[in-house]
Image 1 (cartoon, rainbow, N blue to C red):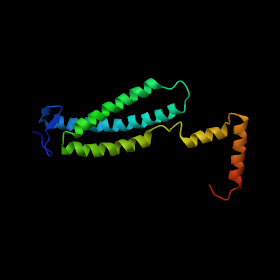
Image 2: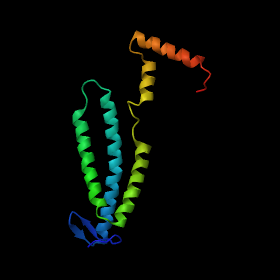
Image 3: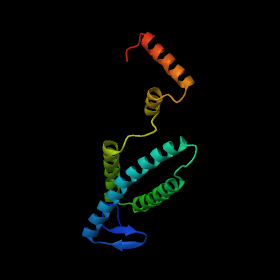
Image 4: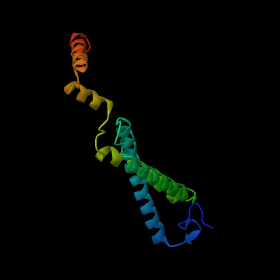
Length: 147
Protein backbone atom coordinates (compact mmCIF):
# COMPACT_ATOMS: atom_id res chain seq x y z
CA UNK A 1 0.00 0.00 0.00
CA UNK A 2 1.54 3.33 -1.04
CA UNK A 3 2.02 5.77 1.79
CA UNK A 4 1.87 9.51 1.92
CA UNK A 5 5.60 9.75 2.71
CA UNK A 6 6.81 6.82 0.57
CA UNK A 7 8.48 6.75 -2.82
CA UNK A 8 6.12 4.05 -4.01
CA UNK A 9 4.31 4.96 -7.23
CA UNK A 10 0.70 3.88 -7.62
CA UNK A 11 -1.14 5.17 -10.66
CA UNK A 12 -4.12 3.23 -12.10
CA UNK A 13 -3.24 0.18 -9.98
CA UNK A 14 0.30 0.09 -11.35
CA UNK A 15 2.70 -0.05 -8.41
CA UNK A 16 6.44 0.39 -8.30
CA UNK A 17 8.88 0.92 -5.44
CA UNK A 18 11.74 2.06 -7.67
CA UNK A 19 13.12 5.40 -6.51
CA UNK A 20 14.35 6.16 -10.03
CA UNK A 21 10.89 5.60 -11.49
CA UNK A 22 9.42 7.74 -8.70
CA UNK A 23 11.72 10.66 -9.54
CA UNK A 24 11.07 10.21 -13.28
CA UNK A 25 7.31 10.18 -12.64
CA UNK A 26 7.56 13.42 -10.66
CA UNK A 27 9.59 15.05 -13.45
CA UNK A 28 7.07 13.96 -16.08
CA UNK A 29 4.23 15.28 -13.93
CA UNK A 30 6.00 18.65 -13.53
CA UNK A 31 6.35 18.87 -17.34
CA UNK A 32 2.65 18.03 -17.76
CA UNK A 33 1.75 20.87 -15.37
CA UNK A 34 3.94 23.39 -17.17
CA UNK A 35 2.46 22.28 -20.50
CA UNK A 36 -1.02 22.59 -19.04
CA UNK A 37 -0.49 26.29 -18.41
CA UNK A 38 0.70 26.91 -21.97
CA UNK A 39 -2.25 24.90 -23.30
CA UNK A 40 -4.79 26.73 -21.12
CA UNK A 41 -3.50 30.20 -21.97
CA UNK A 42 -3.40 29.42 -25.70
CA UNK A 43 -6.90 27.95 -25.58
CA UNK A 44 -8.31 31.02 -23.86
CA UNK A 45 -6.63 33.30 -26.39
CA UNK A 46 -8.06 31.25 -29.27
CA UNK A 47 -11.54 31.44 -27.71
CA UNK A 48 -11.39 35.24 -27.39
CA UNK A 49 -10.06 35.64 -30.91
CA UNK A 50 -12.64 33.25 -32.38
CA UNK A 51 -15.50 35.09 -30.69
CA UNK A 52 -14.55 38.27 -32.54
CA UNK A 53 -14.75 36.54 -35.92
CA UNK A 54 -18.06 36.36 -37.74
CA UNK A 55 -16.98 33.50 -40.01
CA UNK A 56 -14.07 31.13 -40.60
CA UNK A 57 -13.65 30.43 -36.89
CA UNK A 58 -10.95 27.80 -36.20
CA UNK A 59 -13.43 25.32 -34.67
CA UNK A 60 -11.28 22.23 -35.27
CA UNK A 61 -8.37 23.85 -33.47
CA UNK A 62 -10.61 24.99 -30.60
CA UNK A 63 -12.13 21.53 -30.14
CA UNK A 64 -8.69 19.90 -30.34
CA UNK A 65 -7.24 22.20 -27.68
CA UNK A 66 -10.23 21.57 -25.40
CA UNK A 67 -9.88 17.79 -25.79
CA UNK A 68 -6.19 18.08 -24.85
CA UNK A 69 -7.08 20.21 -21.82
CA UNK A 70 -9.56 17.55 -20.70
CA UNK A 71 -6.95 14.80 -21.04
CA UNK A 72 -4.43 16.82 -19.03
CA UNK A 73 -7.08 17.46 -16.38
CA UNK A 74 -7.72 13.71 -16.06
CA UNK A 75 -3.95 13.14 -15.73
CA UNK A 76 -3.88 15.72 -12.93
CA UNK A 77 -6.69 13.94 -11.09
CA UNK A 78 -4.90 10.59 -11.40
CA UNK A 79 -1.66 11.98 -10.00
CA UNK A 80 -3.26 13.94 -7.17
CA UNK A 81 -5.40 10.95 -6.19
CA UNK A 82 -2.21 8.95 -5.59
CA UNK A 83 -2.13 10.77 -2.22
CA UNK A 84 1.65 11.14 -2.17
CA UNK A 85 3.56 14.04 -0.62
CA UNK A 86 6.06 14.25 -3.49
CA UNK A 87 3.25 14.53 -6.04
CA UNK A 88 1.59 17.30 -4.03
CA UNK A 89 4.86 19.25 -3.75
CA UNK A 90 5.54 18.86 -7.47
CA UNK A 91 1.95 19.94 -8.18
CA UNK A 92 2.41 23.24 -6.33
CA UNK A 93 5.87 23.82 -7.82
CA UNK A 94 4.80 22.80 -11.34
CA UNK A 95 1.84 25.16 -11.28
CA UNK A 96 4.00 28.04 -10.05
CA UNK A 97 6.65 27.34 -12.70
CA UNK A 98 3.98 27.01 -15.39
CA UNK A 99 2.46 30.39 -14.57
CA UNK A 100 5.90 32.03 -14.50
CA UNK A 101 6.98 30.56 -17.85
CA UNK A 102 3.67 31.26 -19.61
CA UNK A 103 3.54 34.92 -18.66
CA UNK A 104 7.21 35.34 -19.46
CA UNK A 105 7.04 33.87 -22.95
CA UNK A 106 3.45 33.73 -24.27
CA UNK A 107 2.60 35.80 -27.34
CA UNK A 108 0.57 38.97 -26.81
CA UNK A 109 -3.17 38.60 -27.05
CA UNK A 110 -4.19 39.69 -30.56
CA UNK A 111 -7.73 40.57 -29.51
CA UNK A 112 -7.01 42.39 -26.28
CA UNK A 113 -9.46 45.30 -25.86
CA UNK A 114 -6.69 47.91 -25.69
CA UNK A 115 -5.10 46.56 -28.88
CA UNK A 116 -8.49 46.53 -30.60
CA UNK A 117 -9.11 50.12 -29.54
CA UNK A 118 -5.68 51.21 -30.72
CA UNK A 119 -6.21 49.48 -34.07
CA UNK A 120 -9.63 51.12 -34.47
CA UNK A 121 -8.13 54.51 -33.66
CA UNK A 122 -5.26 54.06 -36.10
CA UNK A 123 -7.40 52.63 -38.92
CA UNK A 124 -11.02 53.78 -38.64
CA UNK A 125 -13.11 51.60 -41.00
CA UNK A 126 -15.70 54.20 -42.07
CA UNK A 127 -16.70 57.86 -41.89
CA UNK A 128 -18.80 57.43 -38.72
CA UNK A 129 -15.83 55.81 -36.99
CA UNK A 130 -13.56 58.66 -38.10
CA UNK A 131 -15.97 61.15 -36.51
CA UNK A 132 -16.05 59.08 -33.30
CA UNK A 133 -12.25 58.99 -33.22
CA UNK A 134 -12.09 62.77 -33.72
CA UNK A 135 -14.59 63.30 -30.89
CA UNK A 136 -12.66 60.94 -28.60
CA UNK A 137 -9.37 62.70 -29.35
CA UNK A 138 -11.00 66.07 -28.68
CA UNK A 139 -12.33 64.77 -25.38
CA UNK A 140 -8.91 63.45 -24.38
CA UNK A 141 -7.19 66.72 -25.30
CA UNK A 142 -9.66 68.87 -23.39
CA UNK A 143 -9.72 66.86 -20.18
CA UNK A 144 -7.57 67.73 -17.18
CA UNK A 145 -6.63 64.10 -16.50
CA UNK A 146 -2.95 63.24 -16.98
CA UNK A 147 -2.39 60.01 -18.89
